[in-house]
Length: 409
Image 1 (cartoon, rainbow, N blue to C red):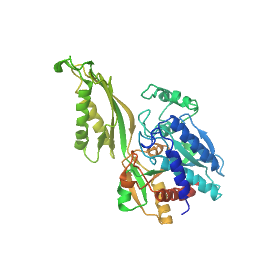
Image 2 (cartoon, rainbow, N blue to C red):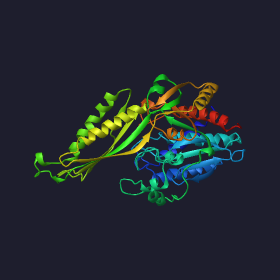
Image 3 (cartoon, rainbow, N blue to C red):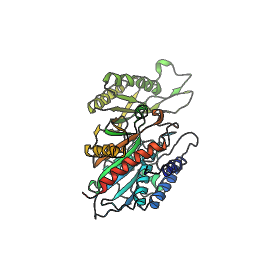
Image 4 (cartoon, rainbow, N blue to C red):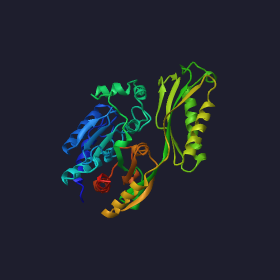
């Protein structure tokens, strides 16, 4: 095996220490103290492997190994390093570590690429702090303008530029990347499902990615005393929200063909035990492999929510994210498969039911995405785990593919 399992494990273990919830999973929100600690570590490792390091106007980290061809577009390898609350050590960081290991292998083998190699560590893929998700890659692709970024705030009202400045980042820097400067993007991610482990397959070569949208719903009612307000005179925002949320799974089931809805976050105001809630906010995540189903469900959800606008109940629905289903580049998929065969590593082709930065960057460059097995299919929880030798196998597939892509063409 070419990849160093010891080095890979060291990086995974080191990044896992930067969490706000020790012994309760990884909680590393964008621009937090834990973000800064992980960011410092990643930049130090990039420099160790001979890369020139920079950060853009969102705090995405790039480490570049210059190529022989002047002004040639780069082959970029990496993933994100933020997490969900109380998540695992592998979702995102495994892909960043893959990039670091590939840089180490280029250095060890004295490889001078024709096209530059860049390792990337992206921010806010999960959307755990600022909502929506995929923020780093959306910025790179040009889907977030400067004014859009200024308007993004967390639940405490702190804007992205304010949060960046708190950890010493410069929000005035450019974010959008000229597509002409990118030849290809490669990402490795844990599967977050059980198929590879159950089938004892080492690598999943992803051919397509699910479409998804996220809605932010606000239900407003009227506060009142829990003991003195008669039941027939209440405008209880939480009761309305609960009835709406209970119906959403059935809307997805009726749409069929694998369409899913999830309410993963909600807040109640004023959140007092003896106060009738006057406002509830919650997220709705809708996914399908077919765009028509996403659009259908979005409209059905909006119509259903609107039907509750009576008896002093008001509703607002904002679409914070929309990504179409994506077919990934077939030439890159073929290269990844050829690398698996060259290395005698077992693989299958797959569809991804989770969204990834790769789906955003596929709009501006050729993209390849591979999965490696997840223990028991678990993810977004402290039990998330992938064996080091399985990570190393995925790294070697990306390394061989990166070698081919950085050669002269």
